[in-house]
Amino acid sequence: MITNIEIENRTKESIDLKKIKLFSEKLLNEIFKKEGGNYFLEIIFVTNRQIAKLNRTHLKHDGATDIISFPNANKEKNGPISLGSLIVAPAYLKTHGEEMEEVVLHGMIHLFGLDHEIDQQKWSDKICEVKNGIHSV
Image (spheres, rainbow, N blue to C red):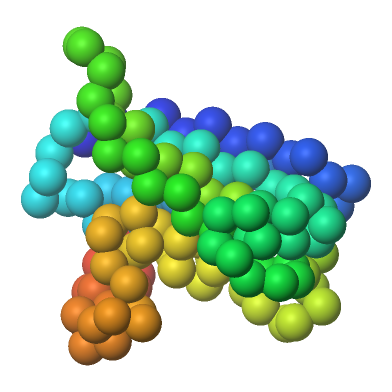
């Protein structure tokens, strides 16, 4: 499996982008291991204000949130499959005591096509499967 992950920090927060990229590659390899293929993922770090605006515009929810997943399963001719974008608010994570890795995993499971509000059991099973897989690597 080939992965191309683009990460952009649009905040003034200090983020270990290399660590996030390596962790994200492990997650993608575990989540999509049966699929094979060439994948592209975008992770963008934004401010609370920016994610609140996206949250209102796209999800009709008020206020900031930790992460928003924008799936985009499209394949370019002879190119990678674009899984979509993860938009993360690191200041929100700090304020709410959330771990970056947990939030990125959460977002990627959404990109995989699962929704914890629709099927909690499948969501929980996939989270456990992925966590067990990356810890055995």
